[in-house]
Image (cartoon, rainbow, N blue to C red; front, side, top):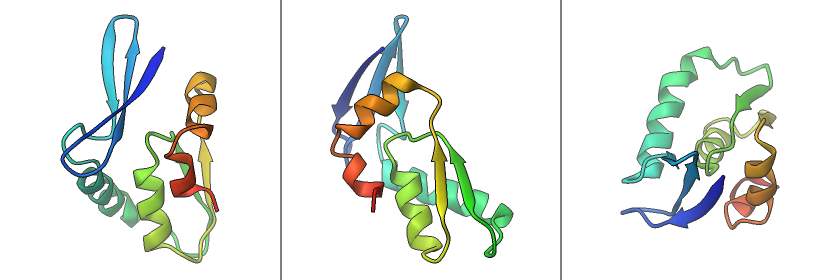
Length: 99
């Protein structure tokens, strides 16, 4: 898997090339808007007295948005792809979500 950072019209996102296929983590046009929409759609399932569990790091914008919407809740992020996780820890996206 080859990971790189690409620019969008708002903020950078991650481009992954794997087995000849190109994938974008978050929208390649407007990652912030996509993260906001995702959080609104998933918000009905979030209970304010429980931890939030998210599967997948992406570029972290959805996690950052959840943290802003639910500042008093713990957010647990699970990433199953070791290559992505190791790359993410050394990327500028890491600082967006780690506190």
